[in-house]
Amino acid sequence: MKLAMIGLGKMGGNMVRRLCQGGHQVVGYDRDHAVVDDLAASDGMIAASSAEDAIAKLEGPRVVWLMLPAGEITEQQLQALIPMLSEGDVVIDGGNSNFHDSERHGIILGEYGIGFMDAGTSGGVWGLKNGYCLMVGAEDWVAKIVKPALQTLAPAADRGWAHVGPVGSGHFTKMVHNGIEYGMMQAYAEGLAILRARESYQLDLAEITELWRHSSVVQSWLLDLTAEALAQGPDLSKISNVVSDSGEGRWTAIEAIEQGVAAPVITAALQMRFASQDEDGYSNRLLSLMRNAFGGHNMGS
Image 1 (cartoon, rainbow, N blue to C red):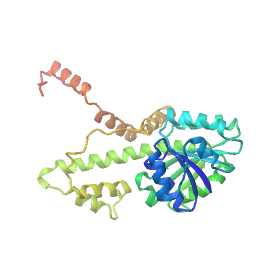
Image 2: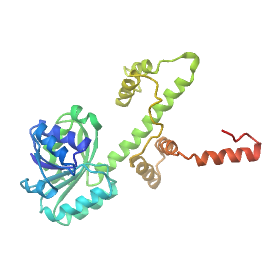
Image 3: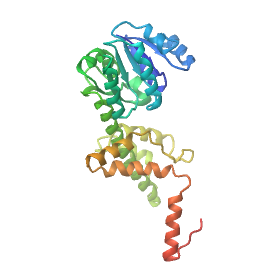
Image 4: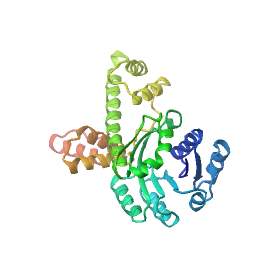
């Protein structure tokens, strides 16, 4: 099939490469024209000088895939696309948008007869080689149009992608996926920290994580990546201890509260990320103050 990709960053650019390698025609646009030129030269992508130019290079039904930061940037681009498109065309949001926004976007585009798909996309920088896990929400007719691209982007045509439900369900599924990811990462980090703390055993964390990768019940791709990183050296002194959160963990915790579903592991993992971002340490200073007030404990550094 032929489609346009707007947003050619790490994810969008590699998705273009995989699509082109799979025989699709991709028209690509990014504000960074150097990226556009590079992909056109290296992978045969059809270069576009603007979103309007990208759409002009398509035939109907026109399919436009957005790989942009969630929030205002995606919102502005989606609104800008409406007058450029016609009934029967399709817009895909493959970024990490909030599922409530995706539901709203589906309604807005639907008023113009334009199809919408929210595509939760997992795979990171390894997606080009291994394929992407795609969780998509859309009406059936939209999913049918986009199916050839989904089959190419996925690890195989028959796995690694699924039309999980109506508009909004793709990003909702990806949101919960990322919440689970937070919990798994936190558990690995805490467990390895406990192993390291038992200094008398002098445990080799690289050896242990490699061990766990084989026939252990805790084996996973996250463990694979951790083992590979530790094999390069266990000294993490040059690694920042500040862990950012992209938003999905927050949304998952909020959804759990709104639905009355207990999610202590995901919520605690999210709170640990917040704690890592507290450069001022004000809450800890308050704890020290209170402890001194009732027990006379030392408050010095």
